[in-house]
Image 1 (cartoon, rainbow, N blue to C red):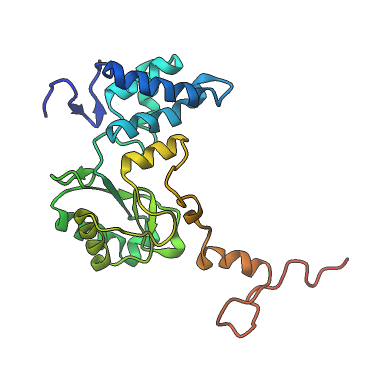
Image 2 (cartoon, rainbow, N blue to C red; image 1 turned 90 degrees about the vertical axis):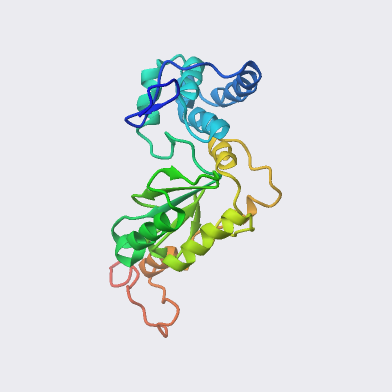
Length: 250
């Protein structure tokens, strides 16, 4: 692997790093000041700052780490430790659309492993790689926190539920052609960089996008309804679980 500046060794950005160009630095510094101002201690803003620099380059580069360290008076080693702990911070450039396939137990058993394998073959890339056109990157996710909709694929952290190998292939093909793709739940897609800026804590300026976010679907709320003693659809009024207060003395 190359040892040139900016290369990646063992998945870590090469250091020391060059600073951002002056105009980029000034713009990001203004954003960073706003983020830091939301916290009583500057270093508490590190996570949103990492999303901010990821929004700039599509990953957390050595330059981004240096910028974050300077803003909150930490060492680059301290910032790197945080950036490499959380998997949402990319160590390599993401595609315009970052596809995460859940391969944890339930999704895997229901087809997640097959979806991931077939997508890699279809796209001609491996885990954490990006297609040559820069449109799609792919990553296996340990859990998308959506077991009730397994197997689940996420694109820029928006949900695509109950996927199959065929539907997942169709999804990435439509993304590469620029077709409008609507998640099963949540707001319409924006680019990975735009998503990162939203995650940093800046408002989604797209009209109606916030209202599209929605809430938990019926499978997500089934356990709550059972705990309340409600009957689920299709059970003909039969209560699977009695309310906790039934049968107890006042």
